[in-house]
Length: 367
Image (cartoon, rainbow, N blue to C red):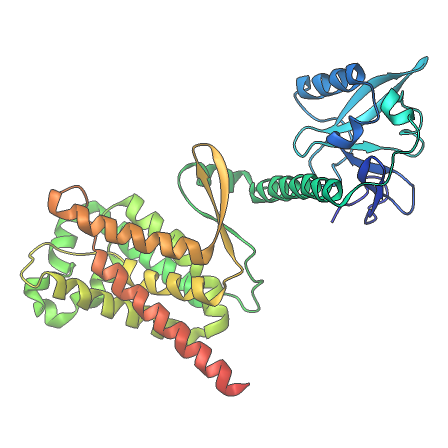
């Protein structure tokens, strides 16, 4: 959907002998793709126009009707005066104010008599060109929409943190998520002064399950191996937890985290019952919340920075990629390259999948 940069009205698509273009029903301004304009303006004029637009560092014109970026205002000679056109170097659209298009110098091809009716093959070729133009416009618009507006999100994304898009608005305050994150932060920060002793004494050790009467199943959840480990878990807890708590309710949400944590710990123990290495962190419970979120909100998406380019993935694809990464980490552990409690993550995620299935069955029964 193209929007008039002057009137904010939805543009109407029209077709002529030169191709497709969009017209504002209010001010009669026009939006044309560069390929269409090339058929009207002499080659030398259009080359100069495009070179000037590309040479400009920052747009100073109207908002592009297609991708909403700021267009570049470029002068072009028309008779004895200059006409200023708004050119978008992103999606290759040009905006013409009322009567601006008619005042442009026209090429011989544009002045030629009306061409013969197009054959079916010519119409098909023209439709393919139009389809490619629209597809590129949509891709440019999606890439632009992916870019975070908040500078904090930009910094976080360049640090490898995914940015949430298209999330459902909250109906209730995520009190449990905030309180749980606060308790985890307070306990973890308090143990950082003597972290090695805290992890050794209160971490979950598969070979010593009876320590402290089994309380290490609980205490290990609130301990973390360092500041990065803590901040990462807190971020993902808040990222996926607020919407999950909103739809599950406080009681079922707590049940999800507790069950995912316990099942994750059990899966970790079964993977190596004789291990004497302490395991700490809330990753098992958070993995359950993440799995539930990705299945419960399929229209949500996550933005990432890959080689300095923004990409946006549906949460379902992100969850599948996460599972692949967990399996890869497990395969790398024998070589000593990775040291992650993979089975705790996958066990917790399995609980999240079951809660989603349970939730879905409950909704189907109710309806």
